[in-house]
Image (cartoon, rainbow, N blue to C red):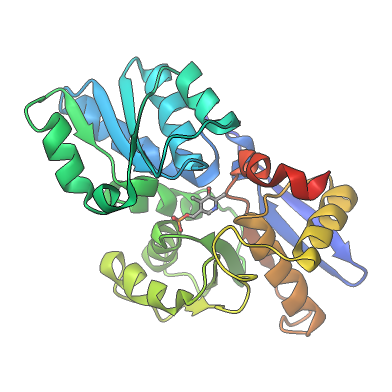
Length: 288
Ligand SMILES: *Cc1c(COP(=O)(O)O)cnc(C)c1O
């Protein structure tokens, strides 16, 4: 499949510009890095003759929407175990429209995903286990492809991180192409220093990795008025929509570091827009 992920120059501060790789434009539902992650997962599932993807996520998970849409387009069935008590929201409605079967499971059960899978689908050899967020070796490989698509050199590449799988893939791409690029990773959760070892599980050479652990704004899916104001200003002045859970924290980090003259004037900075815009729906009341 031909993909559409152009690189666009953004002028945000008066004397600073940077580039954005618009992975958010790849697809509205199989969004950004979730498309990258699912690409080789789907290939692997189909090559093994599997017809049913089984996965896991929270009630506002971009990964669930992406898996539901990708499965529907590939003619596969999909099931998701959703963490917590039964709820309904816009994202789960979209999942259901794509034909996803949703099973709510309490937080204790949810913790052991392999067991949930074995209990419900252990006997069913048409099913294929897809970990939460798509975390896998296939996902890392898919995210490394982002680097192969670049035709010019960037001194700094930024991405937001939840599990760190996307970051691991970018780092692998940087290492494979022997680039001098620094990879800047913005954990969106509190205490994100643990991501260094998560990333190392996939990519051992972390010499080009820099974690910025102070841009979590209170933790996962937490926000502040400063971040909300940043989203409004950034989106209205660039025309690029960003989401409060992931990409806003990364773009804020770039903005903040640029303000502190972190980058040399001749250095090129690239942000990976990993998509996830439906995440805005999870916080819509903050923008009314
Ligand atoms: C899921 C997601 C991430 C986090 O990706 P990881 O590989 O889990 O670190 C980043 N940005 C967006 C928009 C996402 O939906």
